[in-house]
Length: 190
Image (spheres, rainbow, N blue to C red):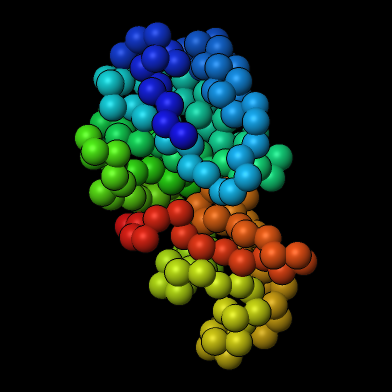
């Protein structure tokens, strides 16, 4: 799903908490029906010159939290951020100890680059990197391959890390009965 944020906000300057809350309502309307498979929701800022921290907090951050908090198959991703918008998003991320998935989408609709805005805790970063390296994995597999190196010999620790990354929308969780497998949103993320 692709959402033009300048259309949602009705302008190329998106500012203020009340406007952000109005945008949140519009965003939630667009995902009223849950998809059958995991699906990215690209919140595209291509035509946005400015998006203030208060607007971002009340719109896209709240949207991501609501969507991921309800265990949805939607994965919100902020796309085509200019430096100004990225700086305000980074301010939010660092202030909250949070991270957000971002990407650049080319004119042909292909994701050409993705990146995390914010900083993951070291163990989460390692787990994120391992999921990216393996392409698809689960907690048991990571524990078997890397538990000895980390002195983390319990699947629960890996499960918690993977679940945490999925809950903030950085990796995709796929359920196969009681088993949960995980894969990256994109093939390469910096």
